[in-house]
Length: 90
Image 1: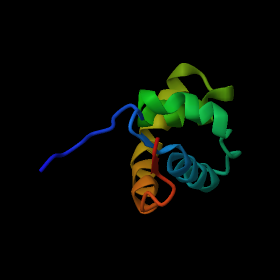
Image 2 (image 1 turned 90 degrees about the horizontal axis):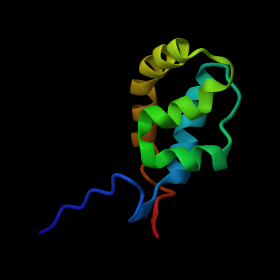
Image 3 (image 1 turned 60 degrees about the horizontal axis):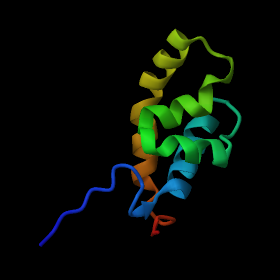
């Protein structure tokens, strides 16, 4: 038996599911949708960076950090709820 962790997106392409999840969170926050290409560049840096890449356009660093921490639980919940339907091996 083996357990594999793909923490930086080298084995699995999870970008579509992350994109779906962040856009659900952004919709709930009345924010514009995230650009897929910009989000894809942030994926290897973790969930907080994904959120920051989607919201930091007009925020100070302190505001961005506060919003990121507040949005993180919902983002992780939305990501889990995707059922990883759009994740596939590279």
